[in-house]
Image (cartoon, rainbow, N blue to C red; front, side):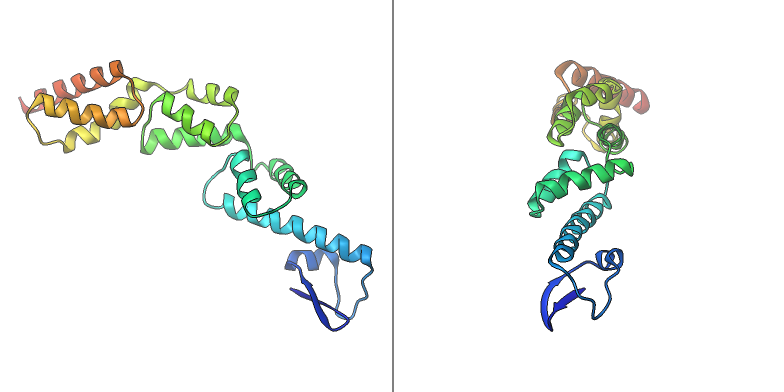
Length: 195
């Protein structure tokens, strides 16, 4: 909403700031009131931007902080917003890390190593990462990741099958031993199905 002082546009405020400030048409504002309103409005805009960013998916604290800095909000407002979001239970790095790992496991399994790297890039604390990644089983994840890919491979040549499936699993961060055992297991299962 636009605020006019002495008939001239002075600044704009969010509707929430106007309602909280109980502003009325024709009201006179002191310098202190203007300063308080603009400070409250900066905080509200920062909070709205953070909530909007969180509306797509959960985020780590570092992701939110970085996004708000990119949007040119000042450090004091960012810290107050992060504090408010934590109070409301909207920002929690442990919950975020668990969400991230579970989401990866369900839709695109990765190795512990790659999941650890992704969480580190999201700014999650290493203690939280260690706790969450410890629940992942590389062999089970590799098998689930490779199963659908193996079904789409139409080759009857083991070397081509091994190379393609191995490359696929390597891109998902799995190690040599896990890849070899997974490829061998899927090849055996394929041979049994063919009879």
